Image (cartoon, rainbow, N blue to C red; front, side, top):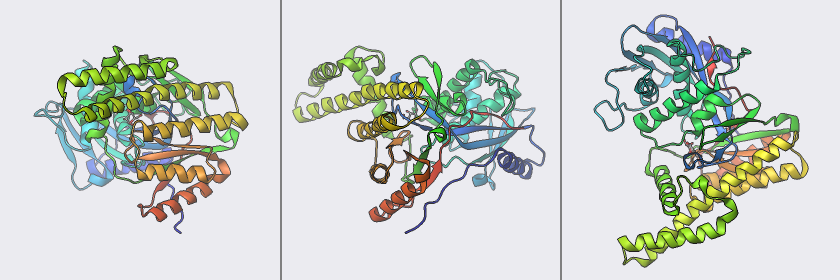
Length: 443
Ligand code: GLA
């Protein structure tokens, strides 16, 4: 059997050096600075952000590093190790939303989109810039590699334009980040992703990258953007969070994510609430019965013939809604367990694990966003002794997390590798997720 392969995080020094070298090789000068932004995993609270619910992400030690210098014109030039041979060149005056004449293709959309969104918010005109990206957030692993990219640009541009929004001039400085300014930066990054890259995501990833604190999970209230930093020192409890990148093909720009979001919006409209987070979990059974009736009536008007399709559709809306309402309740419960217990052990640890397991099962059965690789990962991890395991992020591929004893990381990883081999899947990759620092400047 093959051994598990772990993807290491670059140290700050390595990140600075690699991004600076790439910048110098490409543009022939030293960058004015190097900024970074982390990827994330979400501990619980999945597909709740665009429903105004709670999420609980942590920032990963894996980061996008961005070496950047501003220019005295409106040109943007971008390079990454993958595009070294063909530097992307754009003009800030020509960038526009997806579908417009100014549509930006590929990874440049996440970078140029942030500058565009800042200008749309009245912060311009911004200078053009040269930038070299060196990221160790696994691409396409559902760990927010694109949000990390956006957020690194946001802190760099805010800093260089003197906007005083990021409020953390140097990583490791005692300066508290300006959380209000960062919440504002989140909105520009979300706009870049929604409007310019065309992915209708909900904002949790960008909030995690910009607003998490080291050693803490971020209780994010997606209704009003308020946050609370919840201690999440797994090492002190002898635990570790193992991330398993399934390597299954995955894309949030395809129709499935948008379809889930549309179903939630329809269910909320039928129930007469703004967002599904407005439904009270205490009335779940009653509300779901009510929603089913409303959905059946709603459909009868439009396609009276296909009775079985109408019933299937109503059942689908009920399942999607049930996931959202119960997931928000599970997140609130897990937050309370963390806040009330310094150490995760015994019954408390068992309850945390059960909540994670229930989250995955709900995402598999009710929300239908898992895939064979995610389900096999979670089952193998649980059977190998994980206290809890679930998919994390948008789903349809991407990554899973397993809460394990610190000395069981290798055993659980090996069990997952074995299960992949038995199922004929591509080999997975592994990461260790310690709750890390938010985006900032390194040099
Ligand atoms: C993706 C999106 C987020 C969020 C998660 C699911 O990561 O980018 O906004 O909706 O899926 O929780």
